[in-house]
Length: 81
Image 1 (cartoon, helix red, strand yellow):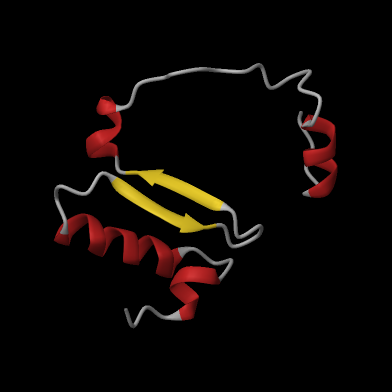
Image 2 (cartoon, rainbow, N blue to C red):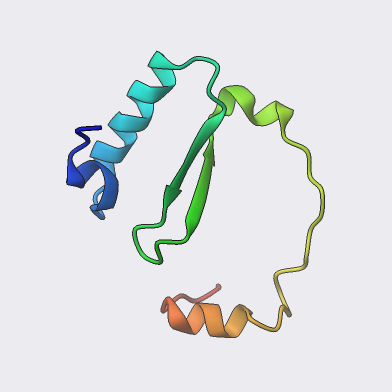
């Protein structure tokens, strides 16, 4: 697609935001983008605000007390305050 690496994998997000804005303008019927995480390379989903009202919550799980929460926080060196 000719997208610069800085737009896709770089930790500074200005190029990625610009790419998303261009996609948003060019494809008005597009609901969002699926892309690999810069950190984990697992799938991430981004939904454009123009379509957020179409989303429906199917299920939720409590975050606090989740058995894997501590491992995830440690792995990514995060803390909850």
